Length: 258
Ligand SMILES: Nc1ncnc2c1ncn2[C@@H]1O[C@H](COP(=O)(O)OP(=O)(O)OP(=O)(O)O)[C@@H](O)[C@H]1O
Image (cartoon, rainbow, N blue to C red; front, top):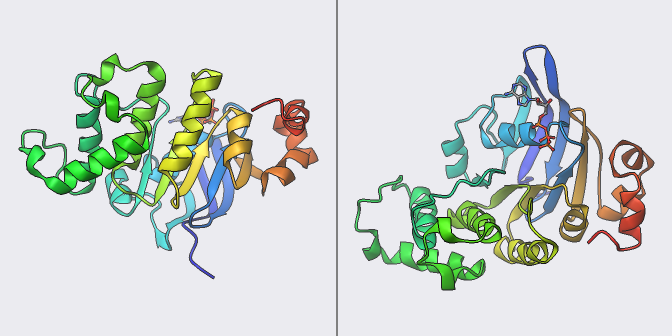
């Protein structure tokens, strides 16, 4: 059996008396696309913050490719091959689209955010930057200041920066939030293409996206995973219907929610 990309065991996180993550167990295989769903306040972002190093676990274990990373600093986790996006965009508004992606590439190669270098000469950096821009379909907008991009393209740029470092495990926090139906469809196609062969973990409220993209889904309710399984299993799970999906499960079955 191969080592899972992520292996979480009895993970707990409290803020003062509030127990937000209450004994999460989860294994995500290499190359799997895994969605984490659940009601508002269930602890999805907290779980992401624990995995990516933003929060120290109160107890429990998080392993990335078999190595314990619980409580490790975010930049070290990033160097170990895990990269995450944020709900609030992380882009540098005054820099061009290309420079934003190039920062992600440079950072992962150990250059830090050293814009003052003549990075144009670093062929490998240029090559990787262009490759990512092409993958996410932003090559024709590469020279625009990021601030001038339409909202959906800014979110796409955020995804491009997240994958720029070449991490094998990608965490995306609500990547299609605020997008129209057609923008969402395009974003899903881009995400699938840009993360091909990588391990993808997404938190997402749009059930059309989740059921279209995920190999497996975990449902988090009040800090506990109440079900993990293939989309068809989750759709039909009575506990999930009761706690979260409700009528949406019927819509998904009829193919209405995409
Ligand atoms: N730093 C913190 N200190 C105290 N409480 C926190 C902190 N971070 C999150 N919480 C609380 O933890 C609970 C879970 O929040 P979290 O943002 O993880 O939920 P979520 O499932 O991501 O919700 P949403 O779907 O609305 O984004 C909330 O009640 C929130 O108020």
